[in-house]
Image (cartoon, rainbow, N blue to C red; front, side, top):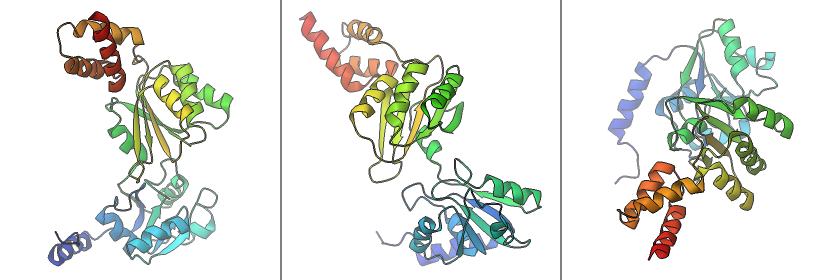
Length: 296
């Protein structure tokens, strides 16, 4: 297999087609990789190359991406403290293309950019999305929790009382809930969720698409215990089942496991209980062996 992604003929066709789109002038909100540098669309690269300026949350961080792809477009710092200052808005003129990027993922989603987008709309500057990576959508897609209805809540308040109050306001939410969290607060947040929500199903995603990415699925009890005993590092997405989807007690699945073992093999019994109760397969297997030893 060739080291090149595309043959010269295919590359020429791709960029001719991109050019033929005659991209309109205005501000393009461009999603960039959340970890793996290859998670970016061809159109995103094209827009970043053709834009007059790229407004970036952190120019030093964004320069790494542009350098990797050989893009020389000028970067302009655009963060929460200056995004509608004259230093930014005075650069935006009609009949030009501009790009807005954040450090990682989709701009304006728990990142700066909303006020600049709104300024452009108010000043009749067209705004277009260039879709791509988003950490919370990526985490939800592999969580194993319902995806038909969900609510994204971003970062909870950093102070304990405010965080608990925010969780109390969400305890009756029936949709799957998605949060972002830092490594220094992940253990405390999971413990507080357990206290307020009860023992619901949960998925904790760490370092999505990066070298050390990890996905821990289980009950809030299991995950709160795990992260209290294992010093976490990286960036986290926490996905929690909605109200009415509390995890079963140990007695619930043990009783059914014992009944199933009377008619099914150990392997099938473990699979059936794991799939129904979403309890760790290792835990089910351990209990199944103990039950078999006891009934011999």
